Image (cartoon, rainbow, N blue to C red):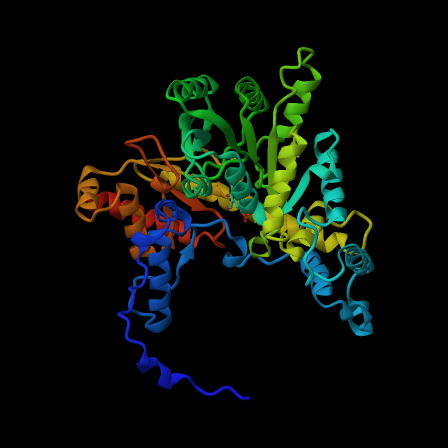
Amino acid sequence: MSYTSLKSLASKYTFQPATKLLAKDLNPHAINAKYAVRGPIPTKAEELRAKLAGESHSLPFNKIINANIGNPQQLDQKPLTFYRQVLAILQYPELIYNPALVQTIPKDLIERAKLLLGKIGSVGAYSHSQGIPYVREQVAKFIQKRDGYESDANEIFLTSGASTAVSYLVSILGLGQQTGFLIPIPQYPLYTATLTLNNSKALPYYLKEEEDWSIDSSSLRTIIENAIAEGTIPRCLVIINPGNPTGAILKPDAIANLLALAAEYGLVVIADEVYQENVFKGEFVSVKKILRELQEGDDQGRFSNVQLASLHSTSKGISGECGQRGGYMELVGFHDEVIQQLLKLASISLCPVVTGQALVELMINPPKKGQESYEQFKYESQAIFDSLEQRAASLYAAFNEMTGVSCQEPEGAMYCFPNLTIPQKAVDQAEKSGLEPDEFYCSELLDNTGICAVPGSGFGQVPGSWHVRTTFLAPGTEWIDQWKEFHEMFMKKYA
Ligand SMILES: Cc1ncc(COP(=O)(O)O)c(C=O)c1O
């Protein structure tokens, strides 16, 4: 029998309708979570972008410059050809049988695509929840080569970006308000947001701005001791290296001091190392490598129980493939029971994005010298690296020329986090507008130039200090000049 409309039935019901849910009815932890890189200023930027599209002469600028988020391909960074050609074949394997196409692309690329097709099968199928075994083995080899210490594929989890790893770790390690997570301030707001979502407690530790955003491990000890005295179990220590938003790279001895605290107090270390390829000055040394060195030199077993989760991602580096959601975490020193629980958690969302997993393999195994793909890959990736380095230097120089601004030199990552002296008149005006002074500055910057940067208050800062975080991803240097001009105008206006 075919279906007949039930419109006539509606009038037979006599109940009073219940109301719709409002925000106040939702999970308060979700309501309280804040994520500044997509907060009010970026939202306003989107409104202005829509305005520009409609009536392009209505604003004092003709485009929005998104300096608010480390999203390179949103800002015209070209994807690496090698990655995309392999992914294209994984998406549509019939391409391999197209002779016209096969002649135009390097043989090693076709071979890589075939290898991955053999190991992965269809990218449209769910994979193992922990990630494709072959890719995990490759990640273990990559880590082994990077650090000079063994890595076990069974302890690698492929993830949909590093964010998913953070979410798994916080949800499994946090027991509500009685467990504390030591997070650097300033921090990437993923951490505070995920902690709020999980009703876990942040134990902020301040980075020392005037000393290249370094960490003072003695003040960390005080924070830990105070937390214990107040009945909080310090559970986890988050290290972001290279830093977001600071752009700083931690020195190996500083990492060793942090690991000593972790060993003494039983803190799980989350090492967020997504910017490990974005290094302009100094050297990136992984937390895992330092841990293994300490364990080797330790005949008392002091470092034996350290548990470390280190994270990496395809979103950063030179790939900048944020939208593909590739990443991994390596679990070092965890009890198998905990690993099994993490696996269960991963299995609830079935599997990480499969093309993202393939991209992890491409990121850690770039074309080798002598292979046909090598020259183009090298050329493209070097160009991306060089332009990031140049823009980091231009931005750093520009900030330090601005009145009342000081900026630490970015050693890595994709960001500058300059310190602003905001004139009292501007602070008063901000208060009238219900904004933090740095939010007011960013709002004025956006209104006058179209540059969308994020106030330091979204990342945390020493009370009474004001910062702004900008990426150095936007192409060209014109926008940097515009920023300089705006800044001097702002300082004069509110002097
Ligand atoms: C320090 C840090 N960790 C993690 C992430 C999350 O990256 P994804 O989830 O795209 O891998 C970001 C993104 O900007 C970041 O800056």
